[in-house]
Length: 370
Image (cartoon, rainbow, N blue to C red):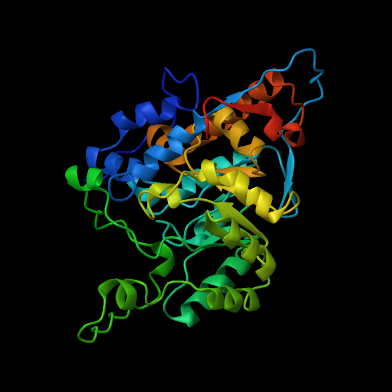
């Protein structure tokens, strides 16, 4: 079942960014919604991501002069107007007929950085032509190194400013919620970036071999893969999918330009901790000056404030991006970004923070032991 075109207008009843999630339930077929909203297995980590924000309260401050306040930041050598990044999401066609092109136009209009996925429904070249200058490319390593090198060359030629290597998605258990809704990936949902590369058949496993260790994980990225990638691109390489503080420190030492604290939106290991819960320990491990982005459950400016307070330099938006895309196309994504920015500004003002650098752990108090 295909997704009906989203109207290019803001529907009534949008008071905050979270409203896009509510209206997406009306805009999307049930199966598409279940897939987008779900994660893997029992969706335990999906739920944990959202619940983690409730463990922190924001401490108001009074009599602070914030009249010169702003949300600008420097990231990857560029100055951005706000700390919201459009995360890589596969198969954007599930949400809107224009897929990632609509998100790219919204990013261009709002100054946001966009990170298209290797598995996007439109090619990286098409997305680059629609996006603004702040664009990075999310990379999955291909089993054939020549195909990975071609993707890198294409990304560099299209003006992407960084490579974001995802390392936590080599294996995913199906979401029971999506299976119960009868979701099947539509035939038209293909990875446009990979269309030119022939797909080799997986070799038969020898008797006694594991379908997991010797099968699904055969081409999973390793530390050697990271070093190979760093040696074969002139672009800075960020690594997405980091939760363990030791991994974060090792990535810094290995030469990664920065990391994204993420559990793949709950689509990886179900039962893993919430991204927000691991953020403070990761920040402590890599130090104050190393770039750390956050991904996992942001639905409001207050959520973003909490992630920034706990150590993130900026936050990624995955599901919320797709919800806004489904409801109102490019205009919806741009409006969602505007609402989030204003929500963040309001939170900052009431917490006495005029600039992002003033948002610190002291801005929060635990609502109960974390």
